[in-house]
Amino acid sequence: MRRTIALTATAYHEAGHAVAAHHEHMRFRSVTIRPGAGNLGHLAYRMPGWFQPDVEADARHRRLVERDARVSFAGPAAEARFKGRHNWRGASDDLDQAVSLLGYVCGSNGELEAYVRLIRMQAQGLMERHWDEVQAVAEALLERECLTAAEVAAVIDRVFDAGAHGRLALGDRL
Ligand SMILES: [Zn+2]
Image (cartoon, rainbow, N blue to C red; front, side, top):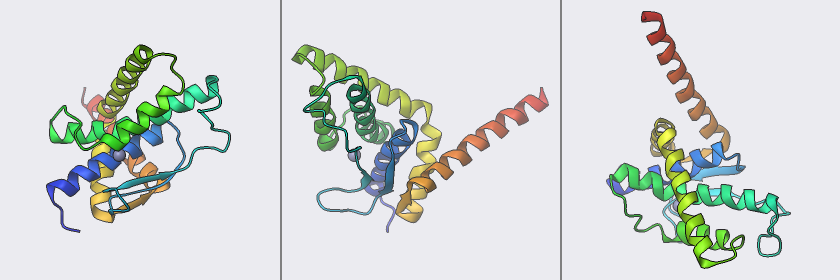
C-alpha cells in the first residue's frame, strides 16, 4: 500500500479506535486500514449477547453504552489530532452511531447534548494521554495493514515499557 497522507490519516483514525477499545476493555477481533464495504478501515468487534440498549437502560447498559461511544469518538478524535484540525469532517458514521447509542439512555435532547459533549471530551482526553500508543499502532497498521487485538496489545505494551525505561534512565541520572 502506498503511504499517502489520506492513508496515514486512516491509520491514525483506526489506531484511535483500537487504543480506546484496548483501554476500555472492549473485546475486539482486529483492526485494519484495508478499505471494506463503505469504509476506509474497520475495527471488528461484537457487543455481548445481553446488550439491548433499546430495551433496557440499567447501569450495566449505561456503562457499556458509554465505553462504546468513547471508542466511536476516539477514531475521529485521533484523526483530528493527527491532522491538527478540530473539525471532525468525514466521521459522520462514528458520530451518528455514538449519538444514537447515547440517545437510548437519555431522557431529553438537552441531556443527550450534554452527555455527547462529556463522552466526546473523555475520548479526546484518552487520545491525549495515550498519544504515543496511537502513533505506534498507526505505524504498525501502515506496515502490516491489519492487526489482531493481541498484536495491538503487544504494540501498546512495548510503548509502555519504553516509557518506563525512559523514566528509569532519567531517574538514574538524577
Ligand atoms: Zn471510525
